[in-house]
Image 1 (cartoon, rainbow, N blue to C red):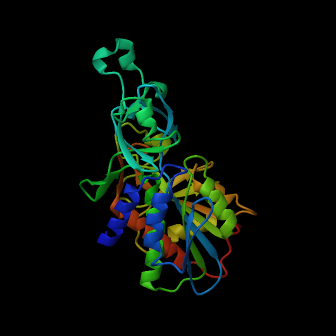
Image 2: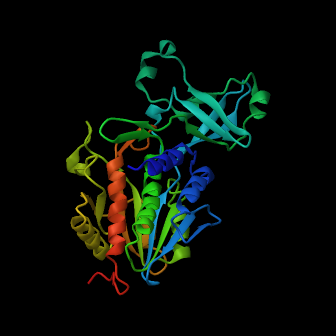
Image 3: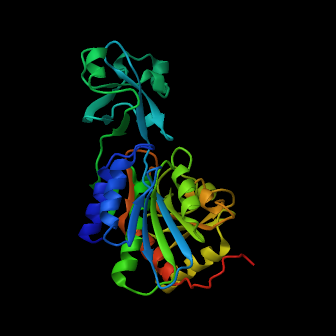
Length: 356
């Protein structure tokens, strides 16, 4: 991966963006993508939309990757100055105790740790149970409630304090790859279209959507606003090349073997076929996911916007989803952007997405 793209990815991942508080990540996205777009706008929801026009006005192609991440929120401050919290998005409580966190306040980030009763003081039955969120708290070192309230407010968002790490074999580990990986791919797709200078038809709208983790909200309003003919959500998908996952139930997906292209009721068959053709012609590796129902991603709401949109889902394989140590392949990120750029260049102004 070129250094400028990697630096953008790192900045995007470092920016705190729990659902509803995505502004820091949106600023990073806007700063990077404005060099490759005709226009960049941010709407009232906080979605950042970058537009690049081709040789014709149609078709309108919307790419979206959500830039929000899971996190926590300050719920209550007790008399001793400990912070109790709720979750933003789906979080595995097995993994919560013992983490360093950052509380993002109006005065800046405040460090803390998620505390729990020491194992030495637990009864045998306690040790076997997952801690309840009501029993977990954040210690910022405050001496009492008054001092804590001078620093943080109820409703302040919280992220786990981890940063991007490079692993072997072109893999990276970070929090928030679900789905800043998708926002990164969307931005890189626009960059490839702009820098390679090859002709394409239509208008591409690359959107970093918000609030996906709490209800696919940003994609809902963005699709209504931009009225695309085709909409492709870029998210992360389950890599199953790790112990403990039943491939007969989930499918067979590996890191480094290319983007996952979904096939099923949520996916327009014309778009699916053209994605596969584009991958084969461009010698881009890919994997296919069976998705007989809804995909649980922004593709759901893209498909159902207004009178209907030709929707698709391209996913980056990801290990340990919804943990602070999500893992993806840099090569898969690059191949996902290459696939989408090739797909767009294969569209014609007269393309029909009616599945007959």
